[in-house]
Image (cartoon, rainbow, N blue to C red; front, side, top):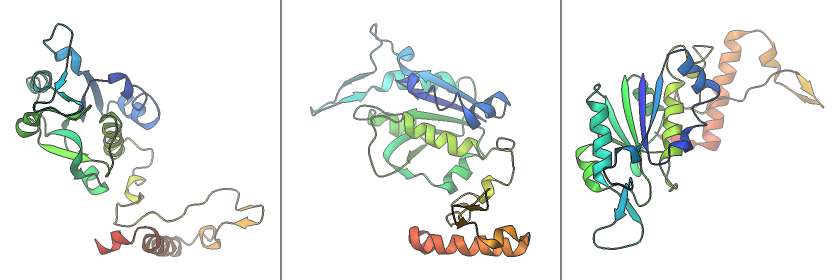
Length: 225
């Protein structure tokens, strides 16, 4: 898989992709992540990428020209399954959507900033808009990193245990059950005996019941869905 992220603040994305699972996935050759500085695609002598909104109002708008230049430059080199725009009013990002995107080969993610992008970008270049929640961030960089992280960890070979991602919260429509590790008892607090029993079937039954109960308590909307 290849993910190209377009941003006017590339340094914000240095850390998320230079450590832990995402770094190892790149080192293994399982994914390529390329961050593109939008200012390098501006034809303005000052590398300007934003301007005042037509009609007035507070805030600046990202211009169509540098964005179009960048997307076209990438598309001239390879085909892309989706050109994604991180937007507060986009499709809600879910585990189901992460699963879907993990099956793609090449993705472009455009990070918005300021008051957003010229609407013509969304009308003519974007194929999918995604939101990670009903709130507004300073820009789309952190949201893009969230989406990339959720997608990359699903790729075969990224996690040490291939079954790990399959037991994550939301994969089966439920939140994950509680987990415990050594020591079995700490200051009088004990791990459930069933987990120490060695009875695999009963352990799985216990975990499923715990997932159901926890979902009822914490995320009942998932059961409705």
